[in-house]
Image 1 (cartoon, rainbow, N blue to C red):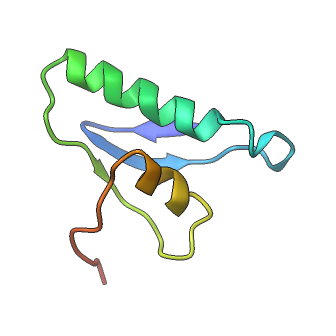
Image 2 (image 1 turned 60 degrees about the vertical axis):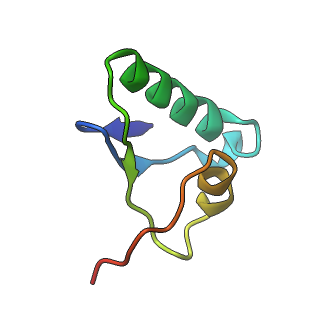
Length: 69
């Protein structure tokens, strides 16, 4: 499941039985493509530092820009 609202990802989860098959990467790539087709140049993703998805986000070029408390 990938929940986006505006150019932001709020929730991304892949069932444990389906992990490590590229689903999260494909969902994010699709979201980025759709937003780019609609002229969105910036896409924000909120994450926890301990999130299992951090390597996926970094491979797709997301960079840490700040912290939320």
